[in-house]
Image (spheres, rainbow, N blue to C red):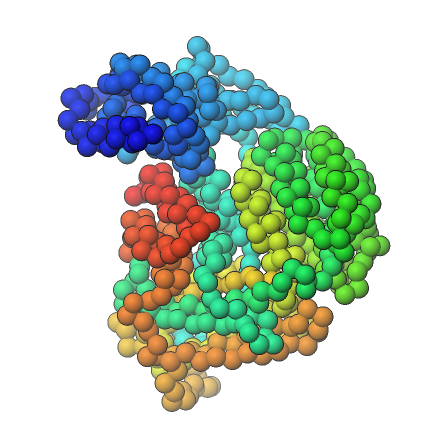
Length: 631
């Protein structure tokens, strides 16, 4: 192996000496066909990213793998003078890869091959063909080119152009508010993470996500920030920090962080779980029902004897597959999961009704009662509209039964419905794009996903107009509340689970700034009178204990002298994530944002990163820059 690494080092050092040059008239596809591997390559068990570095050094063409496939271990033996096209075709055949040409940046991007049933596309064929594939109730139109490469030009040499019916709710960035006219900002917390793993799915498929898929708070809250949990009776700790705004140097950023209390597994209440599983035809693909089954089996292995599991499925009709079964009978539960198969249309409403019925019959009075819905969100039979589904869920949540949602797959993901369903069901919404994400959601963060420590958590921030000219809440657009909702204990809000962390940012324009924002005319019948104070703002948090109906209040002030010249690591990394979200959304408030600045900030604040999530984030940002035609 040392010889391989020495060989790699020598090749990288001598790349500039490669004599192959490309005339400006030669396009990317021709370069790939003409590019020669100058020396023999023989490697075994080397990560794909390192193999591609060898190919790049020898061919003079930069070849990069998206994060999803970069760590695949590769065996490759290539004779000298083989073309780059020939070598990439070997990798495509042996490792199920496909390739995308990016002429703007003069690179080849390596992606995972696309699977539909037992048919894999993205492979080289002798002639251009157009095929029609039917998988369940989904129709795919496929254009297969005579090489494994896909172009950045729309649909040109695109190995799969699937018909998509994905749905996302429109999001409009929160605007700046005048602190004198509107001193209060109120919102509900959000601990969902689906938006981040969904954007990762888009990047790993070689394209940027649509702007409305990006919910900034879900990107920020995907990561943990090592805040110290509460040691007292309060279920969470509260931290605040202020620093300069990276994308608007004359503005300030205020970070508010909540860290949920950790509770040992043996002290957690028993769980009554109902797995509500979509087995309709649209779930047949490998990244849907098969991935779902693998993920659920990981959860089952964490169950205790006092926990109970039932399984309800729905396709053309709903049915009970496994009656309430003790967590100690893991083999019985796993066997029921293994026997699940996809087929039929999607009677989602009937499935939800049956799942709630089963959950109520097995109700644990002082326990955690939850329906765990796993689907691609394609509800097309029976009760299916967003309004009907949410009304159904709201009618049942008063029985003490929560609803969490796990999203899978692509092509017909109904993100808009799934987010609302989890919100109205007092649960969480996660999107699972691979096995590692399944482990993160259902093993590493199982307690936070299932066990609520504080419900109806609301934040209200009052800004001091003597210190703050204007402010803007970053993200949480779908969670903004009226100021009167803060003291209304009947108003539903987000719940917080064991070990969960919640982070929010406000961008602030200091008083006296020359930054001009829209204003309103002075009031005729009333005037505001400012109270002298050294505080910049005051944070108020209302929450309820899980079994209580009356809220409790927490208050904390932030002084205008608390701004850090060198903000903490967690502040800088979270700010980098927020800036990345603004770039993906092409926000009007992105200011001087750039992918390069995001990468620099994130690298400087990566910290320990034992699970590798922050390193992966940096890679996603780097690929986003390659895919962004506006940069």
